[in-house]
Length: 319
Image 1: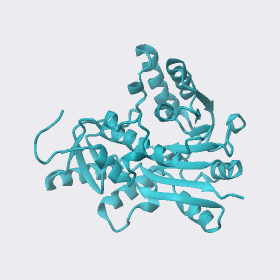
Image 2: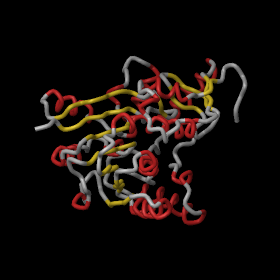
Image 3: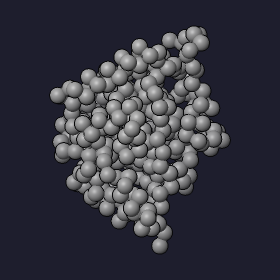
C-alpha cells in the first residue's frame, strides 16, 4: 500500500546507491534497481511507537526458546528449505517462492533507527537492491566460478546469474533440499547453476567444490550460523586462494557498545550465538599481509532485532 502522507518516504534508486556509496553507474545496463524497490515506502516512528519497538525487541531477548547457532545440526534447515521446495513443486518455479520465510516484519532497522515500512517484504527487496550494487562493485566480471557457501534456497545465485552471464554458479549448503531447489531452478531458467552438499562446520563435501584462483567466494547470512567455529572454513579459503571473498553477515564488532539501539542488537546477536571473532581475525591477517581487506562497512539495514547486513570484502595477497 502506497501512502501520500508527508511523513512517508519513497525509497529511490539514488537512496540505495547513496547508502552504499556505490554509484548507479556501476550497474550494468541490464540492471535497474527499480525492479527491487518500486513503491517501497518507510517512515520514522513517533516516540510512542519507538518505545513500543524497543519493548518488542526486549521481549524477544527474554524468550527462553530463541534458537542458538553453531552446532552441527542441519535439521531446522532441512525443514525450512524443504517447505520452500514443496511450494515450488506444488506451484511451479517462481523466483518469489525462493524468499526465505524470516523476512516478515513491518518494522525494520534502517540507517541507525527503527523504520516502519509499507511492505513486509521491504527488508528482502531492499537487500536485493543492495546485492545488485555490491556484486557490480566487487565481483570481477571475468570471474569463471562463483561459489556461495550456505546458499539456502539459491535466490542469491539466481540474482547473480541474471547480472553475470559469463560465470557458472555453485551453491553449497548442508541441507539436501537446497540442491534439489537449485536443480529445479537451473532446469527452469537454463542457467549454469549447480548445487553441492557442503558442511561449513566440518568441511565435509569440499572435494566436490570447484574453488580456486579463478573463483569468487560468497556468504550471505550464512557464516552467522557458525558462531565462533569459522576457523576451519577460513583456513580452507586461504589455502584455495580465491580471487575475491564477499560476505554480507551480522558483524557484532561493528556495533557501538554505548548506543542503546546497537546495545539491543548486540544482546540479540550474542544470545543467538551468531558469528563472532571473524572480523578481528581478518584485521590480523591484513596486518600480517596475508590478505588484503578491501571494504568493511555497516549497510544500515536489519530486522527488528539486529543488523544482518554488514559488508566485508577481502582477497588473499598475491605472491
